[in-house]
Length: 210
Image (tube, rainbow, N blue to C red; front, side, top):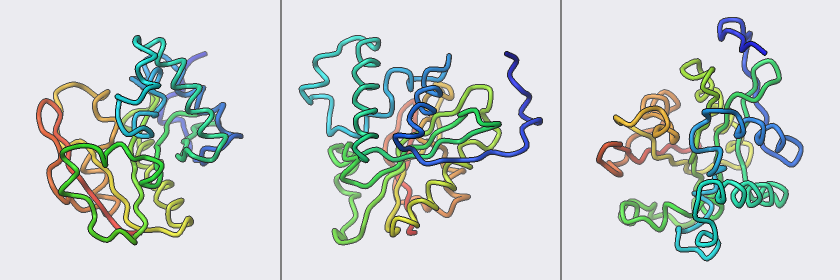
């Protein structure tokens, strides 16, 4: 089946992740050349660290793919995984993961974050952690559509402080830009708080309040 030209796609639609839409996310992640999503399944931020016992049982990416898919599906069915799926002509072409601090605790356990954590412990804290876009739809507004839908969803859930750690520079290709780009978050009203990590890929911590 030929892939439609982007110009022929009238508009993108989005749906929130749920047990009902889980098969759509699975279909997206199983597409060829989708990046690390095929084995990670966006489970990286759900666990505090790789030292967790379950992470030692799967060594190869193929083994991790099986384990992570099973884990993700379980989280979805238990209402412990959130995100937005973007569609073009009813076909899933993009994804953005978000969740509460409790749902996505990984960054809390990194050295870079310790001095940047919010001081107000009472304010609800949300995180936007991952983007996945079908290679045939990249640079066509899929990620921006997903981000807008995520922010709307967070607003419907009561809002709060929203943070992300997008890429400001990388020389390792689009696969290393899965956290989004600074320019995209700036257009969505986010402000840079501080540098986060530097090297071949440089990231910054950004926040905005919903």
